[in-house]
Length: 117
Image 1 (tube, one colour):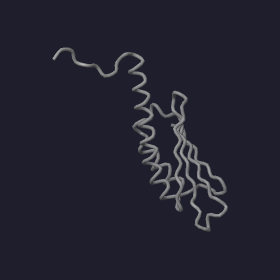
Image 2 (cartoon, one colour):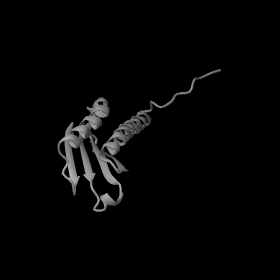
Image 3 (cartoon, helix red, strand yellow):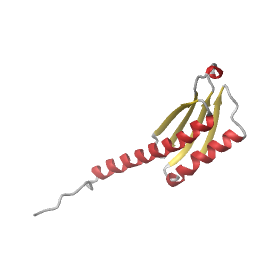
Image 4 (cartoon, one colour):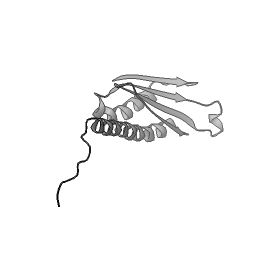
C-alpha cells in the first residue's frame, strides 16, 4: 500500500501524521491485496479558531480502479482520525462485499434454493 498524507492550510508532520498512519493502516491491513494507495487530507479552515470543525478526508484507491472516500469533520484532528479509521474500514469492507456479490451474480453463484420438500 502506498501512502500520502497532505495538509491544506496546515503542516501535517510529526505526531499527527504518525498517529493517522498507524490508526488508518491497521484496520486496512486485512485488505492489503485489494488496496493500492491511501491518501489522507487534513484541512484547517480559516475560521478554525472560532469553533469551526476541521476536515479530515481519506481516499482509498482500490486495485480495480474504484475509489472509496470518507470524510470526517471534528474540532480535533485526533478525534477525527479515530472516527475516520472505523468508517474507512467499514466502507472498504462494504465495497468488497458489493464487489463479491456482483461477481457471484455474474457467474451464477448466487443463493440457491433447495429442491423438493
